[in-house]
Image (cartoon, rainbow, N blue to C red):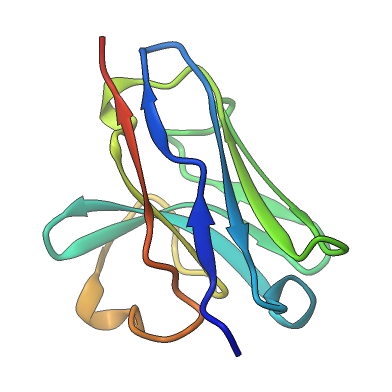
Length: 128
């Protein structure tokens, strides 16, 4: 099974928008849950948003009302629409075919980041 792969990162001014995509390698159909994460320090990631197989979505408090997670099973793609971006949203963003607690530091040693269900990330930079 191919590794999931993110795209769509870039540089944007505060208040701007970006849409991240993740080619999900079949996981939009097979996974119970998928999520978006971002790197918050050298050795920690943070859960940003998750979507379950029944389309239930959840968000970290810091992004609630600004970010929207969705998936297109026919295209096997996971999305993260990010609006009203802030400088503190700048990070490498990852998609994964698993769900962890949101808004909490997750040591990368506790994540299977070298598996094919974690992507290699796409960089988002928010600055003026």
